[in-house]
Amino acid sequence: MFENLSDKLQRVFKNLRGEGKLTAENMESALREIRLALLEADVHFRVAKQFIEAVKEKAMGAEVLTALSPSQQVVKIVRDEMVRMLGQHQAKLRTANEPPSVIMIVGLQGSGKTTSTAKLARWLSKNGSSPMMVSVDVYRPAARKQLSVLARDLKLPIYEGTPEETKPADLARSARKEATQTGRDVLLVDTAGRLHIDDELMTELSELKQLLNPAEILFVADAMTGQDAVKSADEFNKRLGITGAILTKMDGDARGGAALSIRAVTGQPLKFVGVGEKPDALEPFYPDRVAQRILGMGDVLSLIEKVEETIDQKQAEEMQRKLLEDDFTLSDFRDQIRQLRKLGPLESLIGMMPQIGPIKDLKNMKVDEKEITRLVAIIDSMTPKERANHMIINGARRRRIARGSGTTVQEVNNLLKQYSQARKMMKSFTGGGGFLGKRLGKLKLPMGFGPQ
Image 1: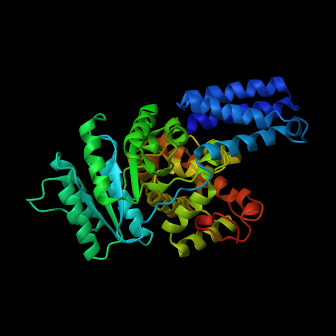
Image 2: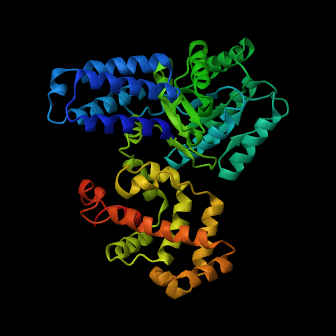
Image 3: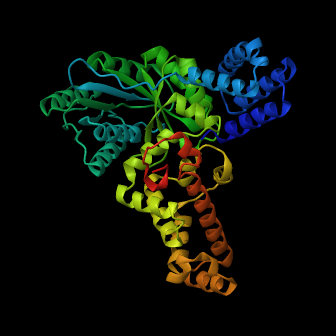
């Protein structure tokens, strides 16, 4: 996500650094480029205007223009303003004085409400809560069935109602009663949606709000719809009073305009983003981390958290030893591929890394599940000696490996190239001299990320 905006902003900063000295003229030119980059990223025009005015006011000060490193200070100003625009701090979920805390999930039909309800329930469960779900969409039986299937897959409780409960208020009231009786501290209410905003929908949601007195009303929007998502969020906020938003399909949105605009337009924070189809593909929204990713600084904290949550510590320590001793073989690379598979799309992980050195060359790498399967098949078709020492793999061996794995020689060559790049990248993350080695002190990280 944010790839287009990130690339354009980094070009602007590179040009500023090339100027040597910052002047009012080249600063004006840079601000024009930044404004254009924001608009092309589908950021709301009013938000882009306010952002540029705020950056200009701070960047054109004498203390910046005459500083020893003015371009670096401009980058800092842009980062700080971006964080402010996104909401300064992570907006945590509110809780009620007495359990269960009710969270209403609202939005237009097709935005991903039901899936987001299940993902949020899983996230709450993993973070110490005991949630229960209920669907009050009495108009689409398929929506209630979908939530039941998701709840069963996640092994989380759901109130499915009785045949007599045909009204949203009846379902919601009974679900809250059951959540209270069974000791659940959160009730997630998946509401009905429409293809457009209408009075009937808003009346129903308002009645549910009055009945349930929810701690949160989260608006779910499809990030791929850009400013339409922001417009709908604003309308729901005016008519219902939302407390935050969840943006789905952020992994497929290269522009990111909705994420950058939604708080500034609605005044309500973005609390979670959906970054894939899997049940665990829901992440809290951190304004500072997102700003750093957009500016090419990476999101190392999120990467560390994801890795530590997923990767086996003993395997991580063994891999770290191999990397430090320069003993990282193709067999190890295969094991790493399998581990990375658990973390989600590889390009999303690379997007969290600072865009410098060898990592910068990998940022546009796209790896799908089928390609990962082919990579593993190619390595499995090698002899133990070839896996231990890739330097002996000559032309004849490459042809044999390609035949054995059902691939082409070109695909074998690509695998060996990716292996070399991975060795290079991982070595930059290990030892005291690596980029993270200098910044993370003695923090021990899985997969060789960081020093011992």
